[in-house]
Image (cartoon, rainbow, N blue to C red; front, side, top):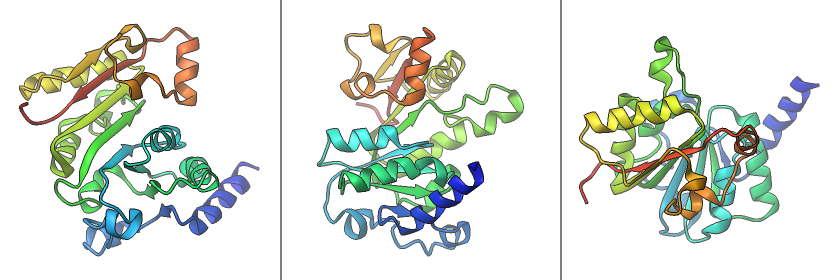
Length: 226
């Protein structure tokens, strides 16, 4: 039953106008027509572009799009069967400021041109605690360099996680880069200064974490001096 459901979702994704699924070869050969042209070809406006990396079911992407109709949102994940739910919801609710891209996160420099993105959201990424998995942590130095390249000057990276390890690891990296976070908190629901979009949107898994009394932490930072 599971494989049949996945196949059904893959087929529906192919017919969704808000889902883009380039091949790895297309991206790496610089033939991806949307790079540098997202607003012209997809959104038909000049609004800021905000990206959620590892978007899963697309809950955060869709809810951000609902709250901010004059911002364009792109959810990115390699697993199309996951973001199928977000894409379907966006279609059903006629949200024209959101789309989904199926690709690997390490390829985002082939997806966006320099300074094309205004904000990046990392919501509950796998902390990849084992040392041999460190290259897959979404805040490792290699990924941070990719984010810096595609973000506009003073563009913000948002990390929301239930992992104390990932929170501390990221803070340590930022300190080593002489970057002072704009906002950092180990329990956002006890922080009166937490950004509204951090506390007013909860994913399915975040709700589960909260019921287990796990603290939800947040770091907001950019790569430029204020």
